[in-house]
Amino acid sequence: MEAVIPPLAWIQDVIQVGMEALVTCCTASRLNTTCDTAWVGALAMGMIFFCSPVVSIFTDRLGCRKTSSGGATLAFIGLLSSSFTNSLGVRYFTYGILFGCGSSFAFQPSLVILGHYFKKRLGLVNGVVAGGSCIFTLCFPFLMETLGNSIGLSHTFQVLSVFMFIQIFLSLTFKPLLPTTVDAKEKENLAGRSKTQQCLVHTRKYFNMQVFRKKTYTIWACGIATTVLGYFVPYVHLTKFVKQSFNIDDSKHWIPLVCIGGTSGIARLASGRIGDFIPGLKKIYLQVVSFVLLGILSMMLPQCQMFESVIVVCLFLGLCDGFLISLMSPIAFELVGPMQASQAIGYVLGLMAIPMTAGPPIAGLLRDHFGNFDMSFYLAGVPPLIGALILLSVPLLHERDLKKTEKTEEGKVKTQDSVVNGELLPGSPVTDAHV
Image (spheres, rainbow, N blue to C red):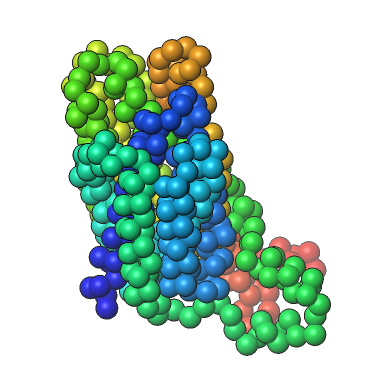
């Protein structure tokens, strides 16, 4: 079964992420203003992250199989219903809300299930699964362009809904090895209480806010949320930017997205192994370097005078994307420990939802106002630079807290050493005070 789970999780990751990026581009290329069309894909991506804390709760309570299959069903309904309407407002709901929310429930359990089967090489397996999502980014843009031009956007939605329908059955193959969190003691404690009290108990238990009591985690989560305000902008507007800035064939404007997907897949595979060799929170320095490069590269896009230079920039953008995605879980484990890692990951993804959703529409609004994407990409590079500065303080604060803890433990050891068989040694402060 261990040999079966990674390909299934990989296929689910591929279907989800590949369709997200490509359907967004198909939708944006056939609708109204840049700002309005950006909301369609940005809303779907935002819902994927916004629902993450709730998905963690459902996964703990119902298990990976039920949560993932239910989410895939909801995403299938959202995609299929999007094919029967041409209204942009309706697609905000069918694609942005239904498909985005369902994808969140279908996608996250496919990563959680890996922890049930792999212990020693979990980092490598996570890298393989995360890297698999880039395969559709490499091969599907050309297929989507052909389908969109030949059968139209509505029928393209129907074709893509077939893949999500297949994902429903893939989810049913999950066989969790760890039990859910419903135990007998919990049922005994809730016996005799009103429904309101039971609801409050469940809310306090599963919306656990203790992770925010750790300064390092709070600062790290805020830094990540700041960064993603400009993170998703190049992915949504890159195709239109290439069409507007360069006189190239229509068959070539997908090449930058393919480059991002290819190098992102390589970086996700490599970062999993690299992260295993970097001890503690020093992994954050990799994220800092990735964020700095991401901000600089976003600002370099308007300066590109040739199409080939855009491709070079996109190759490095993909590398930054790969390191960002693969290092999220290992850093969360280092910050809060394995017992609270699930909640920590869910909360940081939830915090990413609002800025990631707002970034592309704001960039589209700037493009509609100025008539080009220059200002959009310049400003999109600022949040990653700010986020990198915030993350730099996390390892420093963590080391300071460790030193304080070591001093406290040393003081306790000295106090214990001064006691022999229950009596204080001569010369100790307590003995002198007593004399």
